[in-house]
Length: 178
Figure 1 (cartoon, rainbow, N blue to C red):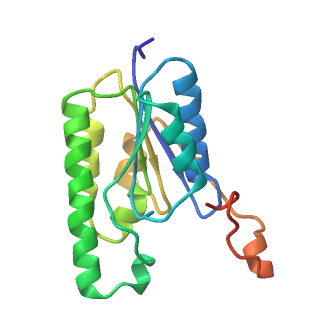
Figure 2: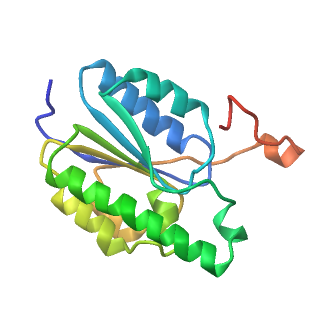
């Protein structure tokens, strides 16, 4: 199966579930014979989805370019520079993926966080949108979508937090948050 026309989807907002929604869309595509690539930024630690996706084989692949480290806001300047170089490697991989049309669905997880932290520019992400193959679906996630990307997107879903158990002191739980 091939898509006739690939669109641009965005999952954004302050609520939980952006990555989960993107993976769910990837699973649906995978189940219909489409090839899925997922690039995760700003997530270096182990998560349940890594194991699951790894077991799916060549038609759903997850790529990370960063070593495991603390949250961006806890990094010193040298660590931020190192992270920026790793993200740059991921960006080069994305450019090669779209140039060589290596997948049907390209998920770029936490790309909005990359933009918010100024590790890439909005223009660089617009370049991906403008140069992806016609038949490739692009799924972008993360908080704080820039207006320029919103305008170029075909679907934007905002995850809005109404209530969250973190506010009750519940910490991130293995199998639920990671």
